[in-house]
Image 1 (cartoon, rainbow, N blue to C red):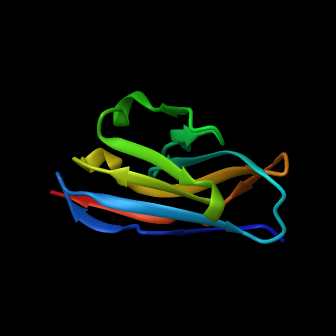
Image 2: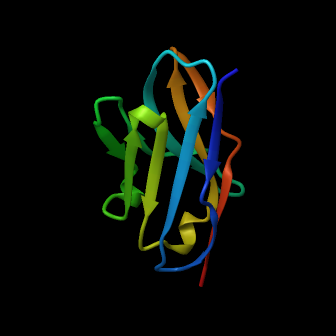
Length: 115
């Protein structure tokens, strides 16, 4: 069974930084894209950032220049470095990965930005 386990969420003041990690484990042959989505209360889940196995990235306009996604293919892990956090970044952040051609989701980690 494939699992995505996130870590690194928490409470931070506006302007601060957090780093999220997501490690995939289990019976894995290959992982294509990996990424992060978020869902704020009362809103739909939205893409934050995504990275292909080859390292190509794309970001939501709202986080460009503040967030950086990266991955370690040897560790089946994806990271999200979040800087200059804003109140509107508050959400549950979900890790997503295409593992052996199947979409997988993590359980989510809460990020709360306070004023």
